[in-house]
Image (cartoon, rainbow, N blue to C red; front, top):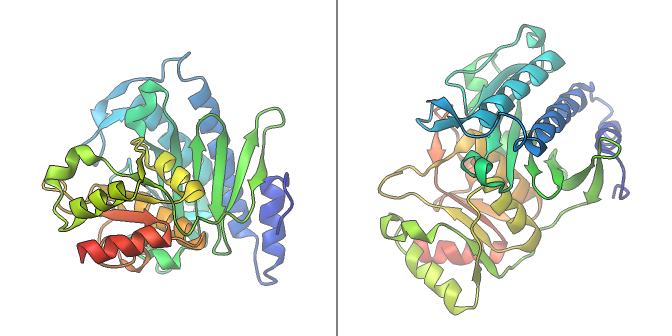
Amino acid sequence: MAKLGIDLNRFILEEERKHPKATGSLSIALMAVEGAAKIIASHVRMAGLVDVLGKAGKVNVQGEEVQKLDELSNEIMVKHLSDSGQFYALASEEMEEPVFPEQGKDAQYVIAFDPLDGSSNIDVNVSIGTIFSIHRRINGGVEDFLQEGKKQVAAGYIIYGSSTMFVLSTGNGVNGFTLDPSVGMFLLSHPDMKIPQKGKIYSINEANAKKWTQPGLVEYIDRLKEEGYTARYIGSMVADVHRTLIKGGIFGYPADRKNTSGKLRLLYEASPMAFLVEQAGGKATDGNRDILDIKPTDLHQRTPVFLGSPKEIDQLLEFIK
């Protein structure tokens, strides 16, 4: 196990040394993500003091109003990751089509990301975050993004809250790094993160309960209440999943009559978060199958999502199947 306080770059390089055939490309790629995250974090901290709060006056490919900080974060991610030369293509929740940077024409990886998850909470100073998912380049086209989540080579999120944390997995467990602003480095604070086998918190927007279309879901939530569970729902996926990863329980965003295929995006949100939760010993499902077994058919495909502790997910599946 890595030592507490080791900085993220050194951790990445030490992980690379465990693989004699490694080229160093993934290490540089992850460092590029880290660099972009630091820049976004600095803007988030200053958001109330400069003109980056509020709406940008346009809608994204999802049909949602774009926030100014959302747009800025996307620009930072695209520029920083493109300049690294380690990504053949970049896909963002904010863009209709992928970007194929000239600097990455010979690169080995593609990356999909949500530049600023929870943007509806920006103006009210609630925790928000960045989510990313890295796959190997296969054929050199859009289809490189349409791989099952279990084929991810790395996934992670950065949460901008009371502290800024970078949570990462390269398929060998999950580790969390907290940004020390005095030295400008992410330092290992949560080594080998493991989700509790059982929790006492459920996180779901019960205001939509009458619209849910998955049979048995209301009865399942009622059962959790009978068992003394506490409801905690923030409305930023990064924040809700981060709490679930640390404290256990279940996070859910089901399909409903308005969002018949679910609302969360498979590539940018569900798949990387499922990868992290499963690497930490948890489970993730759309109600019928493991999230990581789903092969995407579209860049902006949506899916129902339930993830968390094994006990809660197993119990959920008994109710909704």
